Length: 98
Image 1: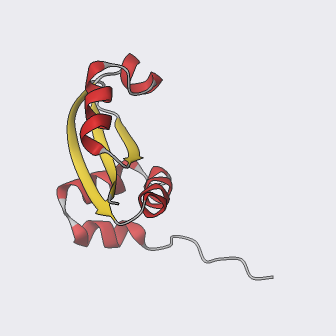
Image 2: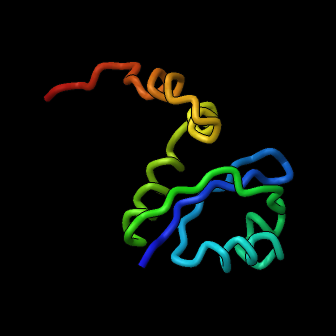
């Protein structure tokens, strides 16, 4: 059964990341104000990005990954600017070795 990772742009301009097994139902919940506290207080204006996965586990993993990204990196993903996304993905500090 398919699952989705998605990004909503909220009225305040914030980005909301989520994952679901039923994107039609979940989007309706968000837009009606029953989806979650965040989208009830700051309603969504649009679904700006989505990816389909074979399992919910994969979609949820992607949600957790992207939630940790900077806004600039999320915007590059949304706009399809993969050159900038690649640049923003480069590690800025070398890892400490033990």
